[in-house]
Amino acid sequence: MAVFRETVPRTFQEKLFELNWSVVLLLLLLGAVGVGMLYSAAEGAWDPWASRHLIRFTMGIGIMLVIALFPPRFWMGMSYPIYLGALALLVGVEFFGETVNGAQRWLDIGPVRMQPSEIMKLAVVFALARFYHDLPPEKVNSAFGLLMPAFLIGAPAALILHQPDLGTAVLVLVSGAALVFLAGLSWRIIIGGAIAAAFAIPAFLRFGLEEYQRRRIFTFLNPEEDPLGAGYHILQSKIALGSGGLTGRGFIEGTQTQLNFLPEKQTDFIFTILGEEFGLIGGLVVIGLYALVLANALAIAASCKSTFLRLLVMGIATTFALYVFINIGMITGMLPVVGVPLPLVSYGGTVMLAVLFGFGLILGAHIHRNAEPPRGAGLFG
Image (cartoon, rainbow, N blue to C red; front, side, top):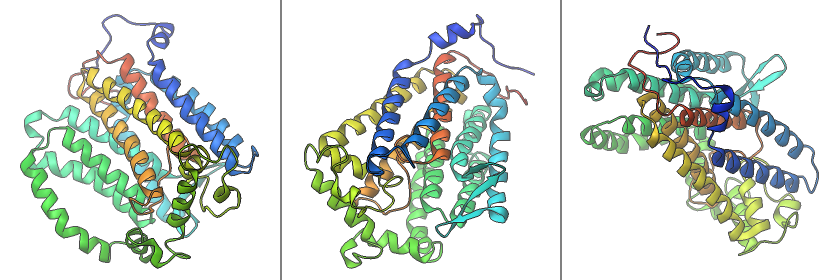
């Protein structure tokens, strides 16, 4: 079995020294922002959110650093098993999932409660990166090269949509489609797919969504039509953001937050707290941190010689960028409210661990960027 090896084996200390510490520092800053905003959301208290967020973030950073030291051949071999395991968890949600706020998205496994759809975002990237690494470039636009990725993306997206979780399903579809495009999909197929989607979207909006999801999508165009119902979230978010002005009201001084006018303030609308308390300047600083993280990730992807590592990093970076784009677009009224958290800042254990696991892979790709595995290499062949 062919596997890719380092020409000069490196010690644990040498690999640790080669970590991209600028990425680690940026992630630490984003985690600190999350702790601060959750402390404010609880009216200046560590419980119930800030302390748990800090503990999870600390654990996640440790896991991230360990993941970064694993050799790429291990992750190549684990790509399909990770995908199949995540798919099995999604199927398990259909039969044994816990219902929270009207959605069946959670699995209780002993003392651990997880959201398999968050794991699936990463699993799809794994499977597609491995698939395109093994696929000869001239077959990317063949029937097999199109149908297999469509299944790898479509099967979990359908299960997630059935939970229902529109935001996560959209993330899986868009990040998967982006990876297919980056793998070398021809423009002829892209244009044909765009035309087909233009005809399919109206039917999907009519028959593929729950009633409350349709209300969310159409309400964002004119939230004033239902200010106490479907439009309440976005109207309160806009009021809070507007009241922050240029420099904000001050830490733990946001009226919309502290008087509990802002719903889901610890999760989907955490950036609104930031905007109200630190204003436009504070919001732009945090957006700048996310931009620097993405710029570093793209630079790492460009430096990788292996198709697997390059696509893996690009897929994780794309998913991360979509998290940020959708969340901020949602709370500013530019996109429908679809329940997408702000990575490393919003409260939520499964999302945080999935994001930091992904960045462990990105940091590992930087360490092993010169590795060039042959097709079919990996732990399981």
